[in-house]
Length: 163
Image (tube, rainbow, N blue to C red; front, top):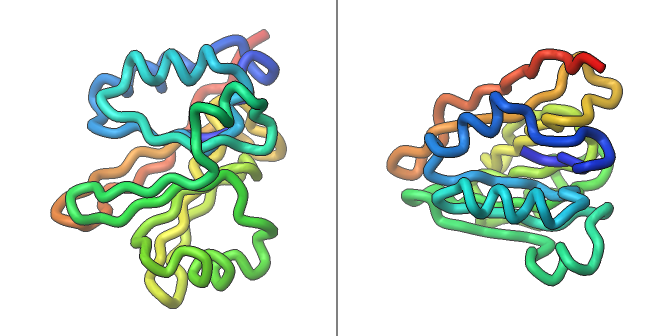
């Protein structure tokens, strides 16, 4: 997930997303948490949490999170960062900046993204589960990692919130 912006964009994380946390071996948040309560919640409900700070995250979150996180997940070299710059040229920029990764998860735009660069780097943006901006739905992603391969990447659309 990314760009939760709590409690400014929503009061809480969607129940459907929270229900998935206990089933995940790893939960990843690609920045713009906005409050430390969300970080505390995800840390308490996740077996393993990988998170980075975003441009809307203040000093408390920046003290607890890195700008870039990298992890080896069963042989898959995964990275997370909040911002990757404009869509135009993203593949080339990310391939040059992260040549040793297999997958890079990013946020910032609130726009779901799933591409593979010519160098083989998979770029994923899960969108936002709380702030759809110009998108038709709020979203998050799930995936499976087995023996160094990313499979079953799924973008989940959340129902629209009622007032």
